[in-house]
Amino acid sequence: MENKKLNTEGSNPNSSFLIPNSSFLTPNSSFLGIRELSCEYISRPWGMFGKKEVKPVLRNINLDIERGEIFGLVGESGCGKSTLGRYILGLKDYRGEILINGSKLDNKAGIKKLSLADRQKAARNVQAVFQDSGSSLNPAKTIGWILEEPLRAHGLPLVNGQGGSAAERQAKIDSTLELVGLDSSHKKRKPHELSSGQKQRAAIAFALMLDPGLIVADEPVSALDVSVAAQILNLFRELNRSLGLTLLFISHNLDLVGYLCDNVALMQNGEIIKNN
Ligand SMILES: Nc1ncnc2c1ncn2[C@@H]1O[C@H](COP(=O)(O)OP(=O)(O)O)[C@@H](O)[C@H]1O
Ligand SMILES: [Mg+2]
Image (cartoon, rainbow, N blue to C red; front, side, top):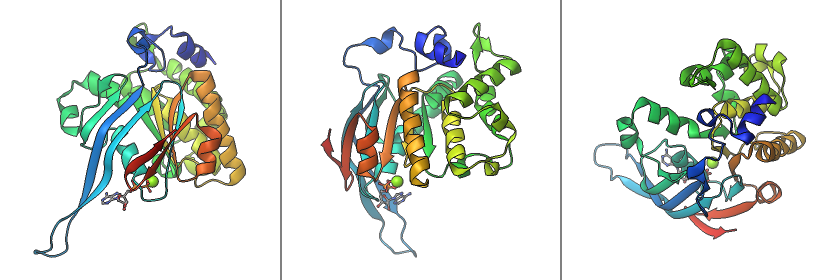
């Protein structure tokens, strides 16, 4: 619970993107702003003489997500939701503008030009949770190892401006496990030794390790039984309340999105056709 305090009271500004600092407090500033984002997939033809096919996937997307809100992106399968999520995660070059916390997300070419510190900052500001969390957790390692890795890589938690000790990393892991409804006994287990709901909780803990400003959750409960799915939705809401977590919840299921989200955008055929 120590961790919770840190995030809400803002006593350690360097270690958390959840903490409002002065630059966050400009009126009407959205945490995520997307301006006229468009993209297409180019399919490679078979053989030498086939014509390249260019298929528009996102068309002129405009979207704002406010700090601390749970925003739902809903639409039928294949309409481009995951593609949009991947752009926000900074995994692709893009046309248009993606603003995170007021600064433009550099596209891949731009990211290479950033310093290591800025790249690390960009990388940890937005984290992801996917449908199949089992495959994103290294099956050969224990949950404790998996959760410690991002802390080691980023030199966190920061203690007096420096990377914390092993004990401080463990304290951060324990408090994050508690936040997601697991406990320190789960640290010794490997991902396949967890139930599907526990695995998704561990994936959410992994996403939280670096105190991201935004989590993109792409169909995070689609592979779960109804009752387990409901628990995970409630967990997202609890994290939103306790940490002020901003969440982009992507789903094809209008009921789920209606249940969980503060605001909803409806997507069809690569376009946002209704916002709110
Ligand atoms: N890497 C890719 N190459 C070519 N087409 C793709 C690729 N990824 C997705 N698509 C196509 O782009 C469209 C949008 O896909 P996606 O973003 O996964 O939709 P959703 O998440 O809404 O189901 C689909 O028609 C899909 O077939
Ligand atoms: Mg998808």
